[in-house]
Image 1 (spheres, rainbow, N blue to C red):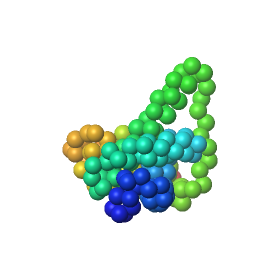
Image 2 (image 1 turned 180 degrees about the vertical axis):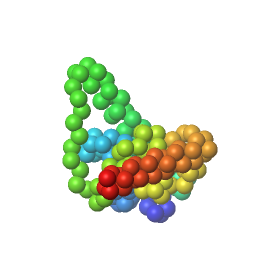
Image 3 (image 1 turned 120 degrees about the vertical axis):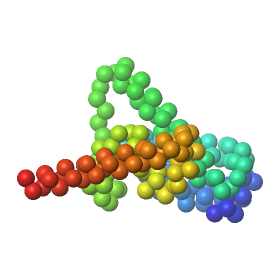
Image 4 (image 1 turned 90 degrees about the horizontal axis):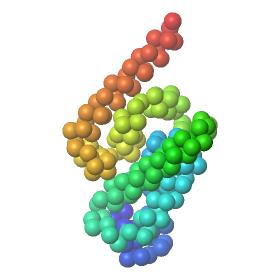
Length: 171
């Protein structure tokens, strides 16, 4: 992947396209976890790809590409959330979510969405995307200790959701 990144940094559109295609699933999972909506996730991903293309030359270390790209994606998702909040406050209409059939495990999806937003993103980046706590710290611009705390609290919330679901089955 480092070779693709180097080629993309020189302005090679084929290398850049191949690089972005290799990251598409990771970007989708992250954007969907934040936005809960396929259309908004697609918008965030396309905006991220555009920014990455425009600023690829500014990437200093190839090894930080995924962290850099994910930070851009999260910023784009936050922009969409801000716009959505402004729109909702003006329109006073409830947001409806679309049905997503791409998540294979519906229970995991439901448990994940039951988490507080601050825990959900850290859990997604750690378990789904495979980032280390130090990388998540860079992406979210927060201390590593905060990332670890949020991981722990997110795990605790997931355990509570799982335990309550199991108790409900046998009641």
